[in-house]
Amino acid sequence: MNFLYINYPSWIHPEIFPGWPVLGLLRWYGLMYIFAFGFAYSILKKLYLNGFLNEPGDNREITEDDVIGFIATGIIFLLIGARVFSTLVYDTTGDYYREPWLIFWPFDKQGNFIGLMGMSYHGGVIGGTLGLIIWCTKHKRKFRRWADAMSIAIPCGYTFGRIGNFLNGELYGRITKMPWGMVFPQADRFSAFPWVKEFAANIGMEIPATGLVNLPRHPSQLYEAFFEGIVVFAILWLLRNKKHFDGFFASAYLVLYGTFRFFIEYFRMPDADLGFRIAADKTASIYTNTSLLNISTGQILCLVMIAAGIVYGTICFVLGRKDNGKQAVV
Image 1 (tube, rainbow, N blue to C red):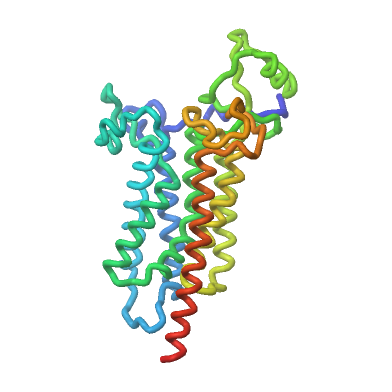
Image 2: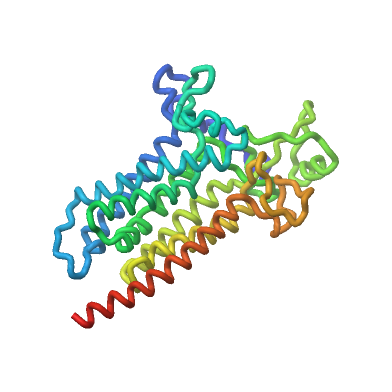
C-alpha cells in the first residue's frame, strides 16, 4: 500500500443505484441538494422560533408558512441563477447563447438524460438574493433582517453540495505531492514528460504502459465543504446572539465565504477552457500553483463578493444607526 497518495474509492459512484433501469438516474449530487435545503430550513426555523425574525415596532405575526415561502422563493431563484450563470459565464462553447432554451434542457443532443449539469455558486448567490428581495418586498418584510437569518442558515447546507461534487468525482484540485492527494478517475492524464516522471517517482507512482499518468489532486471539494461550509456556519452560529445591526450577518457571510473561497481556489484547478483571468506568468500551467498572482475566474468573483460584503455592511451599519435614532426619538 502506498501512503504517499490516495486512490479514489472504487465503490463510490455518482449514481445512488448504479446499473438499475430507472433508479440508476438518481444521483448523489441531487440528493445532496435535498439534504442542503432541508438543513437550511431547519436552521431558519430554529431562528424563527427563537424570535430572530421579529421586527421592533412590527406587531404582525410571523408564521411558519412565511418561513417556508421565504426559503422556497430563495431556493427557486438560487437554482435559476446558479444554472444561468454557469452556462453563460463558465461555458465557452457559445451554445447557450445561440440556443438559450438548452439552459434548462436536461437532455443531450442524442436524447440521453443528463440532468442540469453545471451550477455556479456565485450565480446562485445573485439569484437567491433577488428572490429574497422579491419575497420581502411583496410581503412587506425587512430584507436586512430576513437576509441575516438566511445567511446563517445556508453555509452548512453548502457542505452537502461540495460532498456531492466529491461523490461525482468532479471539481477536484490541482496536482499535489501531499499524502492526502487523491487520484480521481475522471481527471486529466499526463504524458510521461520528464517533470511528470519526476513527480510520479517522488510519490512512488509507477508509469503505466500507456505512458499516461493520472497524478494525485487536492480533494478541494472537501476543503470547501469544511471551510466554506462548516467553519463559516460555526462562526455565524456562535455570533447569532451578538448582532450589532440588521445586515451584519449577510455582510459577514459574504466576506467570510469570499475570503475562504479565494484562498482555496489556489488548490482548486481552474476551468481548463478559461485558465487564469489574470496571470503573472502567461505560460503558467493551471495544474500547479506557481504564483499567487495567477488569479482564476472564481477568485475574481470572490474579490467582488468580499467588496460587496464590505459595502453592504457599511450601508447597513449607517441605516441601523438611523433606525436606532428614530426609535430613540419615538
